[in-house]
Length: 300
Image (tube, rainbow, N blue to C red):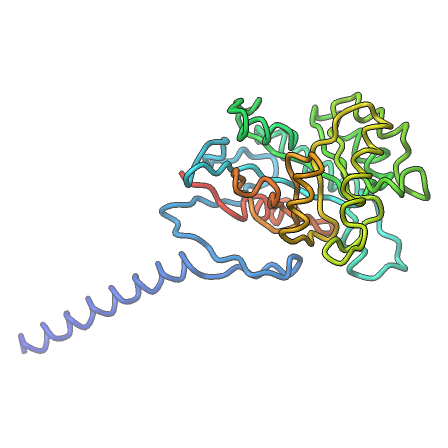
């Protein structure tokens, strides 16, 4: 009888241990399927990284201040928007996903403000890594806009000013003043108000296939500088597509940073010309926004 009890106890203990181990394994490695990004994110060990989804109106309780970690990498989320407005119904679902309503954009900006984030520019990353100048804020974020759409001025710019934030506008120079794109006067006004202006090429081609690769990088920079009277130091690759030759020419053209379209938050001297981003598609709520903002995590 005693032998049977001991065997039963051993089975119970072994089964409990296996259950606990299996549960911990699932917590640490279970993938999160994000349909909007069509990507699977693997959760890191919860003992190293801390994640949370903050309810609207609450303060974050995770250590998210900027700092050096993992041998010289800075944690700075770089957020990418395209259109701030309502998507026309005749667009494809992919094109519609590039639009975010102004009220949702404001929710995002307010969230950043409420949780202690302050905006910096790509030029701040350059002087931090290459000149050793400390970042001007404790909890940095970069808000960027691709393509130079006019809604960046009519919709986004007033919201950024309302919350004391700035943005970086990547402009396609051939499109300036045409259709629904920004005008030179609008770009100048935003630049004077503290917004950063970057190049997004002359015509938004696939750079790895372009026969005018050097011209797209060099001439777009020159046109912006001639019209704005400021040095243009940052660049964004159209479609996020580039190769070693493109990176080399961006450096040769005089840019000090370049933004990719690869997801992530870690920035270092090794990827100043391949800066990763947080991509925003459609009108995501603050729960999804929080998940995407901290998708790469940060060490405690």
